[in-house]
Length: 304
Image (cartoon, rainbow, N blue to C red):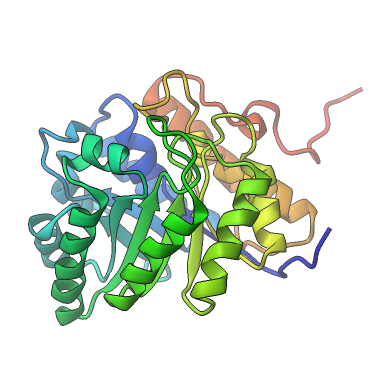
Protein backbone atom coordinates (compact mmCIF):
# COMPACT_ATOMS: atom_id res chain seq x y z
CA UNK A 1 0.00 0.00 0.00
CA UNK A 2 1.33 3.41 -0.95
CA UNK A 3 1.52 6.43 1.31
CA UNK A 4 -1.95 7.60 2.33
CA UNK A 5 -3.13 11.11 3.21
CA UNK A 6 -3.66 12.16 6.81
CA UNK A 7 -7.05 13.68 5.97
CA UNK A 8 -9.70 13.51 3.25
CA UNK A 9 -12.42 15.98 2.28
CA UNK A 10 -15.83 14.50 1.50
CA UNK A 11 -18.49 16.39 -0.42
CA UNK A 12 -21.96 15.11 0.38
CA UNK A 13 -24.02 14.85 -2.83
CA UNK A 14 -27.11 13.05 -1.56
CA UNK A 15 -29.39 16.12 -1.57
CA UNK A 16 -28.69 16.75 -5.27
CA UNK A 17 -27.19 13.80 -7.13
CA UNK A 18 -28.80 11.28 -4.82
CA UNK A 19 -32.35 12.64 -4.73
CA UNK A 20 -32.22 13.59 -8.41
CA UNK A 21 -32.23 9.87 -9.20
CA UNK A 22 -34.99 8.95 -6.76
CA UNK A 23 -38.73 9.35 -7.07
CA UNK A 24 -39.60 12.98 -6.23
CA UNK A 25 -39.71 13.68 -2.49
CA UNK A 26 -41.47 16.55 -0.70
CA UNK A 27 -39.70 19.87 -0.37
CA UNK A 28 -39.87 19.71 3.41
CA UNK A 29 -37.99 16.41 3.43
CA UNK A 30 -35.23 17.82 1.22
CA UNK A 31 -34.85 20.72 3.63
CA UNK A 32 -34.83 18.33 6.60
CA UNK A 33 -31.99 16.35 5.04
CA UNK A 34 -29.98 19.45 4.16
CA UNK A 35 -30.40 20.81 7.68
CA UNK A 36 -29.35 17.52 9.29
CA UNK A 37 -26.15 16.87 7.34
CA UNK A 38 -24.01 19.72 8.80
CA UNK A 39 -24.64 18.35 12.29
CA UNK A 40 -22.57 15.28 11.34
CA UNK A 41 -19.48 17.37 10.66
CA UNK A 42 -19.88 17.33 6.87
CA UNK A 43 -18.39 20.59 5.57
CA UNK A 44 -19.12 20.41 1.83
CA UNK A 45 -22.59 19.76 0.43
CA UNK A 46 -23.93 19.73 -3.12
CA UNK A 47 -27.34 21.17 -2.32
CA UNK A 48 -29.44 21.52 -5.50
CA UNK A 49 -29.32 21.79 -9.26
CA UNK A 50 -30.95 24.63 -11.16
CA UNK A 51 -32.34 22.78 -14.17
CA UNK A 52 -35.54 22.95 -16.19
CA UNK A 53 -38.32 21.18 -14.26
CA UNK A 54 -39.35 19.22 -17.35
CA UNK A 55 -35.83 17.83 -17.66
CA UNK A 56 -35.36 16.93 -13.98
CA UNK A 57 -38.68 17.12 -12.13
CA UNK A 58 -37.00 15.97 -8.90
CA UNK A 59 -35.24 19.36 -8.77
CA UNK A 60 -38.23 21.50 -9.76
CA UNK A 61 -38.39 23.01 -6.26
CA UNK A 62 -34.69 23.95 -6.05
CA UNK A 63 -35.34 27.64 -5.38
CA UNK A 64 -37.84 26.89 -2.62
CA UNK A 65 -35.61 24.26 -1.04
CA UNK A 66 -32.66 26.60 -0.92
CA UNK A 67 -34.72 29.48 0.46
CA UNK A 68 -35.86 27.28 3.37
CA UNK A 69 -32.53 25.69 4.30
CA UNK A 70 -30.88 26.79 7.56
CA UNK A 71 -27.46 27.49 6.11
CA UNK A 72 -24.49 26.57 8.27
CA UNK A 73 -21.71 29.16 7.85
CA UNK A 74 -19.10 26.43 8.30
CA UNK A 75 -20.35 24.54 5.24
CA UNK A 76 -19.44 25.16 1.59
CA UNK A 77 -22.64 24.62 -0.38
CA UNK A 78 -22.54 24.13 -4.15
CA UNK A 79 -25.06 23.90 -6.96
CA UNK A 80 -25.04 22.27 -10.39
CA UNK A 81 -26.14 24.28 -13.43
CA UNK A 82 -26.62 23.18 -17.06
CA UNK A 83 -26.59 26.55 -18.83
CA UNK A 84 -26.54 30.33 -18.44
CA UNK A 85 -30.14 30.45 -17.21
CA UNK A 86 -29.36 27.95 -14.48
CA UNK A 87 -26.16 29.84 -13.67
CA UNK A 88 -28.08 33.07 -13.22
CA UNK A 89 -30.55 31.34 -10.88
CA UNK A 90 -27.67 29.94 -8.83
CA UNK A 91 -25.96 33.31 -8.61
CA UNK A 92 -29.19 35.06 -7.64
CA UNK A 93 -29.67 32.44 -4.91
CA UNK A 94 -26.27 33.33 -3.50
CA UNK A 95 -24.14 30.37 -4.57
CA UNK A 96 -20.44 31.02 -5.10
CA UNK A 97 -19.42 27.38 -5.73
CA UNK A 98 -20.98 26.22 -8.98
CA UNK A 99 -20.57 23.02 -10.97
CA UNK A 100 -21.01 22.47 -14.69
CA UNK A 101 -20.89 19.09 -16.39
CA UNK A 102 -19.77 17.62 -19.69
CA UNK A 103 -19.59 13.96 -20.69
CA UNK A 104 -16.34 12.50 -21.97
CA UNK A 105 -18.44 10.32 -24.26
CA UNK A 106 -20.12 12.05 -27.21
CA UNK A 107 -23.03 9.61 -27.16
CA UNK A 108 -23.74 10.12 -23.47
CA UNK A 109 -23.43 13.89 -23.87
CA UNK A 110 -25.96 13.88 -26.71
CA UNK A 111 -28.34 11.70 -24.70
CA UNK A 112 -27.96 14.05 -21.74
CA UNK A 113 -28.05 17.52 -23.33
CA UNK A 114 -28.46 16.93 -27.08
CA UNK A 115 -24.99 18.31 -27.88
CA UNK A 116 -21.61 16.89 -28.70
CA UNK A 117 -18.86 17.01 -26.10
CA UNK A 118 -17.11 19.75 -28.11
CA UNK A 119 -20.30 21.83 -28.26
CA UNK A 120 -20.78 21.51 -24.50
CA UNK A 121 -17.18 22.61 -23.92
CA UNK A 122 -17.89 25.72 -25.99
CA UNK A 123 -20.91 26.43 -23.79
CA UNK A 124 -18.84 25.87 -20.65
CA UNK A 125 -16.28 28.43 -21.84
CA UNK A 126 -19.01 31.07 -21.81
CA UNK A 127 -20.36 29.87 -18.46
CA UNK A 128 -16.94 30.11 -16.82
CA UNK A 129 -16.60 33.68 -18.03
CA UNK A 130 -20.07 34.60 -16.76
CA UNK A 131 -19.52 32.99 -13.36
CA UNK A 132 -16.07 34.44 -12.84
CA UNK A 133 -17.44 37.93 -13.49
CA UNK A 134 -19.72 37.29 -10.50
CA UNK A 135 -16.80 36.04 -8.37
CA UNK A 136 -18.02 32.44 -8.36
CA UNK A 137 -15.74 29.42 -8.41
CA UNK A 138 -16.35 26.92 -11.21
CA UNK A 139 -15.86 23.17 -11.10
CA UNK A 140 -16.04 21.27 -14.37
CA UNK A 141 -17.33 17.73 -13.86
CA UNK A 142 -16.38 15.24 -16.56
CA UNK A 143 -19.07 12.55 -16.60
CA UNK A 144 -18.45 9.04 -17.99
CA UNK A 145 -14.76 9.52 -17.25
CA UNK A 146 -14.24 5.82 -16.62
CA UNK A 147 -16.54 4.42 -19.28
CA UNK A 148 -19.78 5.04 -21.14
CA UNK A 149 -22.86 2.80 -21.05
CA UNK A 150 -23.27 3.34 -24.81
CA UNK A 151 -19.69 3.44 -26.10
CA UNK A 152 -17.87 1.33 -23.52
CA UNK A 153 -14.33 2.28 -22.54
CA UNK A 154 -13.31 5.94 -22.66
CA UNK A 155 -9.60 6.57 -23.24
CA UNK A 156 -7.88 8.40 -20.36
CA UNK A 157 -6.20 10.61 -22.96
CA UNK A 158 -9.61 11.83 -24.13
CA UNK A 159 -10.55 12.78 -20.58
CA UNK A 160 -7.18 14.48 -20.10
CA UNK A 161 -7.71 16.54 -23.25
CA UNK A 162 -11.10 17.70 -21.92
CA UNK A 163 -9.37 18.76 -18.71
CA UNK A 164 -6.75 20.63 -20.75
CA UNK A 165 -9.53 22.60 -22.45
CA UNK A 166 -11.40 23.28 -19.21
CA UNK A 167 -8.26 24.51 -17.43
CA UNK A 168 -7.28 26.68 -20.40
CA UNK A 169 -10.76 28.24 -20.26
CA UNK A 170 -10.37 29.07 -16.57
CA UNK A 171 -11.93 26.19 -14.62
CA UNK A 172 -10.97 26.45 -10.97
CA UNK A 173 -11.13 22.71 -10.39
CA UNK A 174 -12.18 19.48 -12.09
CA UNK A 175 -14.04 16.35 -11.03
CA UNK A 176 -14.31 12.95 -12.67
CA UNK A 177 -17.64 11.14 -12.59
CA UNK A 178 -17.95 7.35 -12.64
CA UNK A 179 -21.45 7.82 -14.00
CA UNK A 180 -22.54 4.17 -14.24
CA UNK A 181 -20.01 2.52 -11.93
CA UNK A 182 -17.57 1.31 -14.58
CA UNK A 183 -14.41 2.33 -12.71
CA UNK A 184 -11.95 -0.18 -11.29
CA UNK A 185 -8.68 0.50 -9.43
CA UNK A 186 -6.68 -0.04 -12.63
CA UNK A 187 -8.79 2.47 -14.52
CA UNK A 188 -8.52 4.97 -11.67
CA UNK A 189 -4.74 4.69 -11.85
CA UNK A 190 -4.75 5.12 -15.63
CA UNK A 191 -6.97 8.20 -15.55
CA UNK A 192 -5.39 10.04 -12.62
CA UNK A 193 -1.92 9.39 -14.03
CA UNK A 194 -2.90 10.67 -17.48
CA UNK A 195 -4.45 13.86 -16.11
CA UNK A 196 -1.70 14.58 -13.57
CA UNK A 197 1.01 14.21 -16.21
CA UNK A 198 -0.55 17.14 -18.09
CA UNK A 199 -2.21 19.18 -15.33
CA UNK A 200 -0.29 18.53 -12.11
CA UNK A 201 -1.67 21.54 -10.22
CA UNK A 202 -5.42 21.55 -10.92
CA UNK A 203 -7.50 20.48 -7.87
CA UNK A 204 -9.11 17.08 -8.54
CA UNK A 205 -12.18 15.42 -7.01
CA UNK A 206 -13.43 11.90 -7.80
CA UNK A 207 -17.07 10.80 -7.85
CA UNK A 208 -17.66 7.04 -7.69
CA UNK A 209 -20.78 4.94 -7.94
CA UNK A 210 -20.87 1.53 -6.29
CA UNK A 211 -22.78 -0.09 -9.14
CA UNK A 212 -20.40 -3.04 -9.40
CA UNK A 213 -19.05 -3.00 -5.86
CA UNK A 214 -15.74 -1.26 -6.53
CA UNK A 215 -16.44 2.15 -4.97
CA UNK A 216 -14.32 1.83 -1.82
CA UNK A 217 -11.48 0.08 -3.68
CA UNK A 218 -11.45 2.94 -6.17
CA UNK A 219 -11.24 5.51 -3.37
CA UNK A 220 -8.36 3.65 -1.73
CA UNK A 221 -6.48 3.54 -5.05
CA UNK A 222 -7.09 7.24 -5.64
CA UNK A 223 -5.77 8.11 -2.18
CA UNK A 224 -2.59 6.17 -2.93
CA UNK A 225 -2.25 8.43 -5.98
CA UNK A 226 -2.58 11.54 -3.84
CA UNK A 227 -6.27 12.38 -4.35
CA UNK A 228 -7.89 13.72 -1.18
CA UNK A 229 -11.33 14.93 -2.34
CA UNK A 230 -14.28 12.65 -2.97
CA UNK A 231 -18.03 12.79 -3.48
CA UNK A 232 -20.29 10.45 -1.54
CA UNK A 233 -24.02 10.14 -0.94
CA UNK A 234 -25.61 9.47 2.43
CA UNK A 235 -27.11 5.99 2.53
CA UNK A 236 -25.92 5.39 -1.03
CA UNK A 237 -28.82 7.49 -2.31
CA UNK A 238 -29.39 7.57 -6.03
CA UNK A 239 -28.88 5.37 -9.03
CA UNK A 240 -28.55 6.00 -12.72
CA UNK A 241 -31.12 5.95 -15.52
CA UNK A 242 -28.43 4.63 -17.90
CA UNK A 243 -27.56 1.60 -15.74
CA UNK A 244 -30.75 -0.35 -15.01
CA UNK A 245 -30.76 -1.86 -11.55
CA UNK A 246 -27.72 0.15 -10.48
CA UNK A 247 -27.13 1.23 -6.92
CA UNK A 248 -26.30 4.83 -6.24
CA UNK A 249 -23.21 6.74 -5.31
CA UNK A 250 -20.78 5.22 -2.85
CA UNK A 251 -22.37 5.66 0.59
CA UNK A 252 -20.91 8.46 2.70
CA UNK A 253 -21.04 6.42 5.91
CA UNK A 254 -19.21 3.53 4.23
CA UNK A 255 -16.43 5.89 3.15
CA UNK A 256 -16.18 7.47 6.61
CA UNK A 257 -16.29 4.04 8.28
CA UNK A 258 -13.34 2.80 6.19
CA UNK A 259 -11.26 5.96 6.52
CA UNK A 260 -11.83 6.31 10.26
CA UNK A 261 -10.62 2.77 10.88
CA UNK A 262 -7.51 3.57 8.82
CA UNK A 263 -6.75 6.64 10.94
CA UNK A 264 -7.56 9.06 8.12
CA UNK A 265 -9.34 12.19 9.34
CA UNK A 266 -12.66 13.19 7.76
CA UNK A 267 -14.09 15.48 10.43
CA UNK A 268 -17.34 13.50 10.33
CA UNK A 269 -19.12 11.87 13.28
CA UNK A 270 -19.93 8.37 12.01
CA UNK A 271 -22.72 7.63 14.48
CA UNK A 272 -24.46 10.92 13.65
CA UNK A 273 -24.03 10.19 9.94
CA UNK A 274 -25.64 6.75 10.25
CA UNK A 275 -28.63 8.43 11.90
CA UNK A 276 -28.95 10.79 8.93
CA UNK A 277 -28.65 7.84 6.56
CA UNK A 278 -31.61 6.25 8.36
CA UNK A 279 -33.49 9.52 7.86
CA UNK A 280 -32.66 9.47 4.15
CA UNK A 281 -33.93 5.90 3.90
CA UNK A 282 -37.18 6.94 5.57
CA UNK A 283 -37.51 9.92 3.21
CA UNK A 284 -37.23 7.87 0.01
CA UNK A 285 -39.27 4.99 1.39
CA UNK A 286 -37.03 2.17 0.23
CA UNK A 287 -34.09 0.23 1.61
CA UNK A 288 -30.85 1.99 0.74
CA UNK A 289 -27.80 -0.06 -0.26
CA UNK A 290 -25.40 1.09 2.47
CA UNK A 291 -23.92 -1.83 4.39
CA UNK A 292 -22.95 0.39 7.31
CA UNK A 293 -26.54 1.63 7.58
CA UNK A 294 -27.79 -1.94 7.51
CA UNK A 295 -25.25 -3.61 9.84
CA UNK A 296 -23.90 -0.64 11.81
CA UNK A 297 -20.25 0.34 12.30
CA UNK A 298 -17.82 -2.47 13.11
CA UNK A 299 -17.32 -1.19 16.68
CA UNK A 300 -20.96 -1.73 17.60
CA UNK A 301 -21.34 -4.98 19.48
CA UNK A 302 -24.43 -6.96 20.44
CA UNK A 303 -25.13 -8.46 23.87
CA UNK A 304 -23.85 -12.01 24.26
